[in-house]
Image (tube, rainbow, N blue to C red):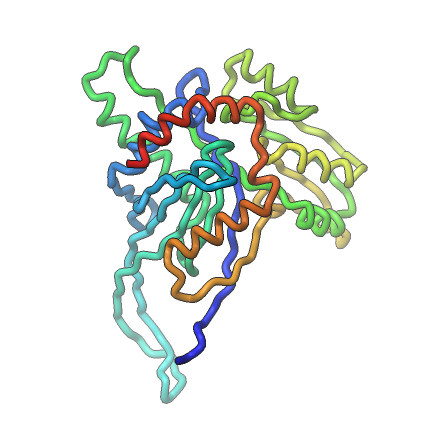
Length: 316
């Protein structure tokens, strides 16, 4: 029997920040009546060059991670091949072939703290940034039907979703070792998903955002010289603010860095034909051994405790 072929894949870690309505109610406040039914309504969204949907939505209880929402994110598209290299002559030849493809990614969202893991199954699998767009559109489509002919004051609230990748200390150190001068660092602070105990120096700013009912706030530091403190500050945002660094490299090149460049990524090795359960098991293993993914604020822990019965009612 031939040895099973394994392959390495990257698991991305992020914060699935979802708030509802004008009062920025947290994810679990409308998980049962908005987000979960929107994800399980079997709707399809046309976007860019494909059709997207989520399927195999499931809630499971993990012994240490709590209740977790998992699912498969699919992109249905057509692959067009107009040229290829002739096997015998090595010359480029014209062809006209079309193939239906459905590459997918797998996601897991920890409901107690809205951290998430994202696994792209292959090249061409839908991306994390596209997942945010499609989930928001699925919610919009669901609400359009659910709120039809409903009095305004009784309608279900709209959702605003942002996905911020978790910062990696190792990546930050490597990137900033190649930086000669930091021109500026900007933070975009958004209404958060129940994380009211935000770390300084952002706690006071977040409070003002909430007191003013503002949609967001930007904070900028010009010319910081202490790179270690900048790294510490970015890590201290706990992925709850969008960071942008404008700087110059040791070679003198101007660069702009976002959370995508210094995001935490874990590499796992799985069989080439790994099924959904094997992948989800790998996601759980990453989360279980990564403190930043299990960290839960006091406010989120309390809301999770209050909404446990709602979550359990959806498990069938």
